Amino acid sequence: MRPAHKEEMKRRARNICLLVAYDGTDYHGFQRQTPPVVAVQNVLEDALSRVFGDAVELAAAGRTDAGVHASGQVVNFFTDGTIPVERVPRAVNSLLPTDIVVRRAFEADRNFSALHSAREKTYCYRILTGATPNPFLCRFSWHIRQPLDRSAMETALASLLGTHDFSSFRAAGGAPISPVRTMKCAECGQDGRELVLTFAADGFLYHMVRNIVGTLADVGKGVLSPEDFASILAAKDRQRASATAPAAGLCLVRVDYDAPWYEPPED
Image 1 (cartoon, rainbow, N blue to C red):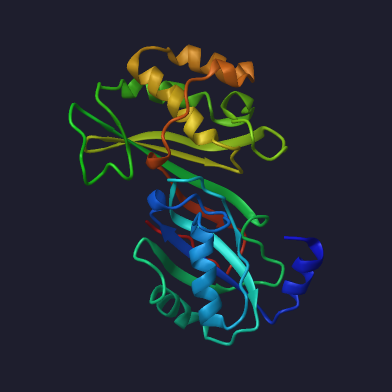
Image 2: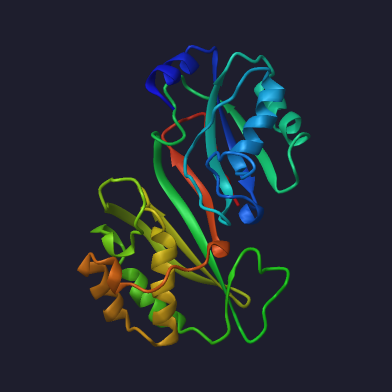
């Protein structure tokens, strides 16, 4: 959004913040696209414009890629619409397809930005292991037939904690920003046949989680050792890391803010 246009939007009476969930399988990512390509933002802005009675332009905490999901995406927009905030989820959801849901709505501070005010983001990545895929999980996980060494993966994950240059896990084509990030959580849990990888950091680079997971899977397969994984991180060289993991397994689950009126999702 151009600066002048942004200032015009901010002159509107209200700043509304939404907590949004979506199945990203059938969308070309979150960020608005030119029709006939459809992104989550296209669909959500259209519904919000109808509810609020003015043109809505969203700012989002994360521009999830094609096929990536969210249970805790956060967006905000400025409006002169007068609908009470507690009525917003039901009103908007009545106009949305079933794979996009507004979970909560908040009256935000004037200076709040879903993108720039974010303090921490949490992503989960799910890997389904075993000989046979599961048709009920295939939209939300990466199926790997062979068993994975969870202990080796947990050892490798420990090397991510703290502040590092994550250039080895950064894809080309992202915004020209610093590759230094602080990883606060990097864990591997178990949910039946699924490994659930959780990452929380002060920010993420383009394809960073999926590149980490692709390399981590090779640790689980025994192709790489945990020491190899640590060396790849230290090398600051994308060519050293493994292939990017598929989009389907990735979900933006939480964004945290220093805002007393905001309530992050509990699930």
